[in-house]
Amino acid sequence: MSLELLLNDGLATLGLSLPEKAKADLLVYVGLLKKWNATYNLTAIREESAMLTQHLLDSLSIVPYLQKSALAARRWIDVGSGAGLPGIPLAIACPEIHMGLIDSVEKKTAFQRQAKIELGLTNLTVIGGRVQDSPAQCCDVVVSRAFAELCDFVTMAGHLIVDGGCLYAMKGQMPKEEIERLPPTWRVQDCVPLAVPGMTAERHLIVLQRDH
Image 1 (cartoon, rainbow, N blue to C red):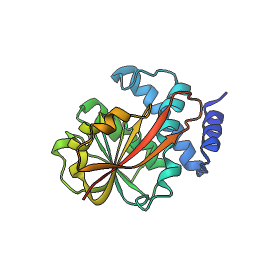
Image 2: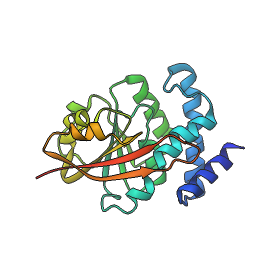
Image 3: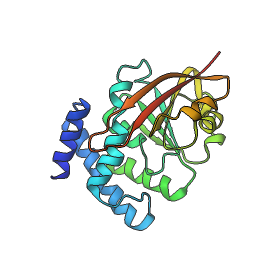
């Protein structure tokens, strides 16, 4: 199956209808990732089809949820973004959000900047640096994908959100023990099972909010 068909099938399964330009940009992003990966080792996944499933569709699996959220059109930050995941696919699919990317590894932020330029993503900002050093209350949503244990996530990134904001943690299996270790000042607002086309592994979105 061609990458284009794989993407179209995956988007249809997720119930997402994207403009042709957005779909073309997602495929360009996969090509860029494969090209840079040969030199910079950004991801252990080498094949474009696997990148599309395990990186792109996995990242986009939260879009149906965020489309229902009041935070959908606000300021987002993707922490521990790596190769721009999930931030770049979300910025492509959801042009109404402004996405910032934070990663402390220079080769990864260099790739993010190149992707921003080549894809013309005006709603994307490459921040770089350490999460802990980023300014407080600078966004409405922080999203992470396999970044850290929930306790560490709220400790390192909790200061980034404004009052009423949320942390979105993309996880594999339901992290019951991690939830139990959360500080008492944080609560799980929602826990959403995610179905990623082409993946059998469990995926969950854990939505965290500060308990006032």
